[in-house]
Amino acid sequence: MMYVKEKQRIVVKVGTSTLTHATGHLNLRRIEALVKVISDMKNAGHQMVLVSSGAVSAGVAKVGLGHIPETPEEKQAMAAIGQSELMKLYDRFFSDYGHTVAQMLLTKDVVENPMRRAAAENTFRRLLDMNCIPIVNENDSVSTDELTKFGGNDMLSAHVACVCDADLVLNLSDVDGLYDSDPRKNPDARLIGRVERIEDVLSSAGGAGTSRGTGGMMAKLRAAQITTSQGIPMFILNGHDPEILYTLMDGGHVGTYFVADEAKAEDRKRRHAYDR
Ligand code: GLU
Image (cartoon, rainbow, N blue to C red; front, top):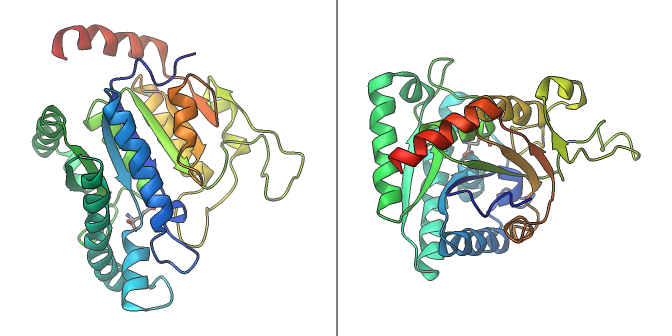
């Protein structure tokens, strides 16, 4: 099955544990590899949107704090420091491959307010028309409460996919995909290649992710629930080697594929015949 080939607009989500070393410092080799693959996908004709975590961790590492802070104020400050560090690198690496990046920082109240959401939709459309690669993160420095916080970048990436009307989400994680039981506890756990109905696999999701990231499998399943219900399929893949994305580009299958709601997917196709 050609999972990627016919998809025009693709959101790639990458988590903190993929982008940083255990020290919290940015993993330059991994980020460079990721940038190269995304650039190549762009060169192959896809419109690419990157949802990147790593701001808090990069900030903590830069100021030498040594641990992720407890208080929201400190976390917000770390995000402000790390976000510019992160964008500096993306800008440099993507420029090397001839691409222009654009920073989009979102909060939940933006996507939930029709006027502000429309403004964000227009900006994404314009950026993609101009051949840019939008790089999105939560605006951590100002999002502090239930009203403004997405609750992690898995959820953010699902909302971004809907806001920018994406055709596919590739969620790069630190696990190979969804297993039928927790692979950290059960050596016989088996990878599930394809999920038709998320309700059937909810019990397979374990708890939290790593100490540096926030995701965990449950957050990814909730994200998949949002995208697939809007007709947008999603993959969970291991981002340890970003070149895994070439396997998908070449028509192979890796990780776990979440099938989109068929009726919604048909609606999207019909609409795109007019508006793309
Ligand atoms: N927005 C956070 C950051 O950039 C990450 C949140 C998450 O990974 O879920 O550090």
